[in-house]
Every structure is written in C-alpha cells, then in structure tokens.
Amino acid sequence: MNNRQKSLLLGTKLRVHFENKGFTQKQLADAMKVKQSWISRIYRGEFSARSEIAKSMCTMAGLPFLDDAKFVEAADADLLGIAAKLAGFSEGERKAISKLSSIFN
Image 1: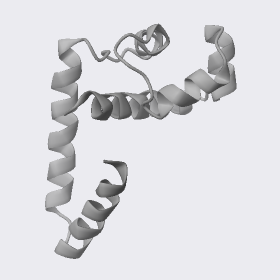
Image 2: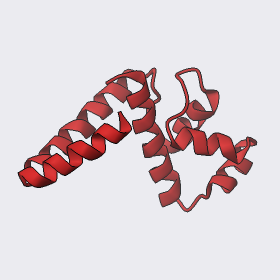
Image 3: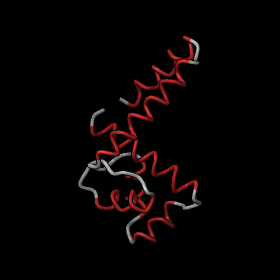
C-alpha cells in the first residue's frame, strides 16, 4: 500500500468516525481551530505523514496515524476483511468493483 492509499484509507476512517459521532466538518474545524477546508482535505486523503492536524484528529478518534506501526496492522486487517467480502461476490460484481477501483488509482 503506497502513501496515497494509506492517506485515503485513514481519511475515510476519520470521516466515518466523526460523522458517526455527529460532528459536521464545520464543528470539527471550529473545535480544532482550523479552516473547514482542512478537514475536507483530510477526509479526502490529501495530507502527508507530517500533517499535525490529521495526527491530532487520529488522537481524538483513537486511530493509529500513518507513522504508527499499528496503522499497517489495522490496514492489513481491513484489507483482509474486504477480501473476505469480495469472495462472496459474483464475477460480474467483482468486475464492476475492479472498474470502480481503477477510477481511484
């Protein structure tokens, strides 16, 4: 998994976590004293391992950050879970997912 893919995965996890807790991007930005556009960028995976904002969000959410060895373990577990789900899909469904995946790579 390359750095862009890691950032995208982590941004998605952060979005899901904070949305499930009922936070809007604006509320989270206000709480962190940053612009809402920063939260949006992080949710889209547009950050690097040097991002203090993303790191702070991970701390708040209880998620490992990109430079944490636990992140790789968690990402591997996520991929295994996805692979198990894919195994239950038909060939046509897997082809459709593959086409969608190429859009994001």
